Image (cartoon, rainbow, N blue to C red; front, side):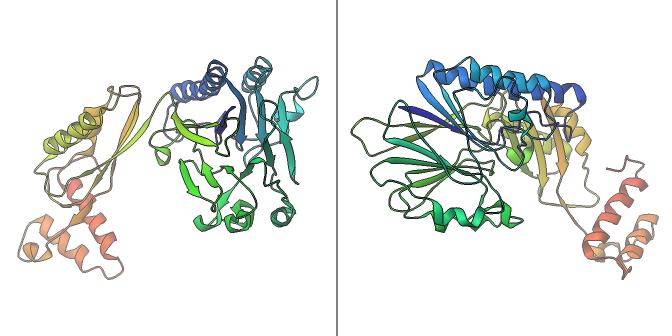
Length: 367
């Protein structure tokens, strides 16, 4: 038996933080299409169940076209069971909008444990529970047959990662030694696999497509496989995103000029073999002198048009040798000494003021 474990698709996300209106629309369509492609891939590869561990959608208001696409994918594949456990971004509106009721192959969960027996392999039990005010009681009410292959679905952040509030937290230690073979989690957008106990593992598949540069790297889903007579659930990560997001850190500490930084950036792009379809963020790091020839806009211009989207962020630190300006009688020297002596500013603030001030004195665009 083959199953797919996915989560955090965030369909219908606005994607307006980085992209212009047209590219945001295209990207939303691509992410929705990746869901449809995954379902088609499942059919072609003999997958009998798709586990969605939360955040199928991104907001309360989901476009009708997006709801229709998801529903069509489910209805057009009656031989695949879809186990949909809602996450903190999901609302009831998708379920409420289903005219004619919930499709037979769409399996839902609630605030207490719900269990399903997999139709293709009766040994496999899929259990899940969604968050509610009674969430802490879930740990004491979970009961699983040790002779079955038990998959448990939840959505939340493992306690060791430190969630923002209790509703985000999954107490991993409370799920140990409860006969779980595979804990199918959602909420964290990077792929992670960690031993749960001597029997099982807990896995975040990560998001199916990266949306921002905090979700850079390879994205996809988990493929699970069981075999008759085996007590093992084999697992593998399947890269599947249409576009990969890359975040490159380029150290400029000893770079002589902007041209040298561009060369370093292009060398890293070449080394990683970044395709034209990618989204790329270049973060400039290291330290530099305030008077160095340095133009992030020129670096940005060198990347424009090479990828679906690119941008450059200046994360460098300014190094200032105040002693070298002590006897400088120019306007620049006077300016640097004045800023140096401003007790109300922190050292970091002084470096920023001097950086912008030197750009202004040169007649450059302040960045």
